[in-house]
Length: 342
Ligand code: F6P
Picture 1 (cartoon, helix red, strand yellow):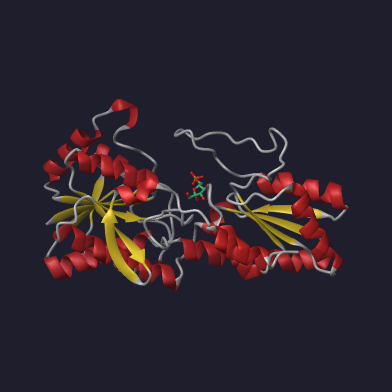
Picture 2 (cartoon, protein in one colour; picture 1 turned 180 degrees about the horizontal axis):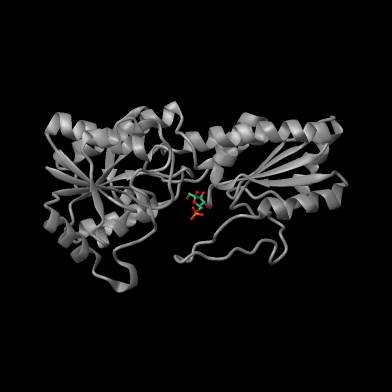
């Protein structure tokens, strides 16, 4: 078979390992050939692609980013007939099936295409770990590692100056990166969008840590808003899809803490550093397994499905499972973590 691969949406450590896993298994097990579309759906729309023989994917499993490039383009943009565009391109190049590697937006588009007759399978990715259909997404572990190392560093400088350090991590509307990195670094309070603390509660934990002679570390998920936040406390621009472009909650909280408690405070936004760089060993293995399993799906009647992790096993679920609901931090995990605050 001839299989087209694309990476779409925000980049994520492990994308290259998926591509390599798919190409290696496809070539050796099934005799497949591959082409890689540049910059996600844009490459399909603009007929912009490269051939992906085995030699092109040599050594890329340990490299961050995506060798194919990515974008948030969408073949249905502006009322276009996405399926006709995609099927037309596939027919011209003799492509039998597509592997779409992406987050909820990409998988939503893939599902729409599948319903219109495009043979496509999905591989879920996001550093946010917010896809319900899979236990963990590759990229999340790397983001947590990077965030944890950064938080450890913030603790060192915070300790030297007896300051409160407020660190903002990614996650969109969920707090998985904040929860895991915050626990790993021993944060004195972790602010999750799912369980909004009030400003008073945050300050109480900060004060308690300070009173014990510690430099308080506050980890805040970018989508967090305090339960008692005044109107306009944080105000985000929207992206072209109407989703908030996060960034700034730490800078809103740090001066408040300083004003209320008189403890010198500093804000740090970790931002895209969490997405760059090499994937961890865990993410390389997970991503490679998902890429290989995606090839099996293409050959085993799995069109319209996506690969997923359940426990330690790679399984497959309908593409719709990725877009049905967001995976939030459950209350049990929150209760577990909050015992450590203050
Ligand atoms: O969804 C992944 C993510 O990294 C979010 O955590 C973050 O809010 C967003 O993407 C940033 O998007 P962009 O790369 O478009 O700035």
